[in-house]
Image 1 (tube, rainbow, N blue to C red):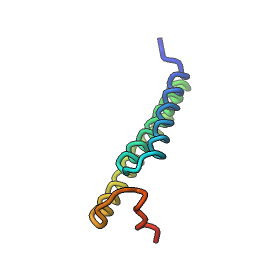
Image 2 (tube, rainbow, N blue to C red; image 1 turned 30 degrees about the vertical axis):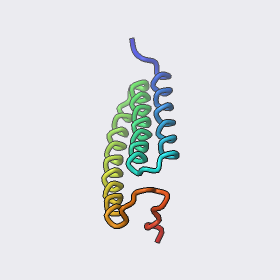
Image 3 (tube, rainbow, N blue to C red; image 1 turned 180 degrees about the vertical axis):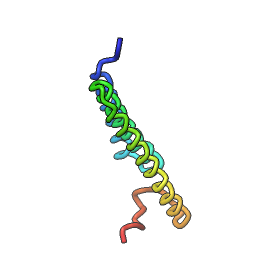
Length: 101
């Protein structure tokens, strides 16, 4: 017995919606990064589910690529966040406007 594709898609939509809610309501950059990761994992779940459903390995290959991009995004984002914290001693995203140019 296999799990129907609809279950994976509904779970992916719920995870993505939770990620969007986290990005829009949180002010802590770490929680925003975690919410973005949750959204990327929701996309990965749907890619894997569709790849499995269609019998194609393309979804798994795209998932590996998305995971690599997510790791790079987090490392660059955390580096920027640490640099801002060292200079301003504040990481509230509402008051950070130092990158406006």
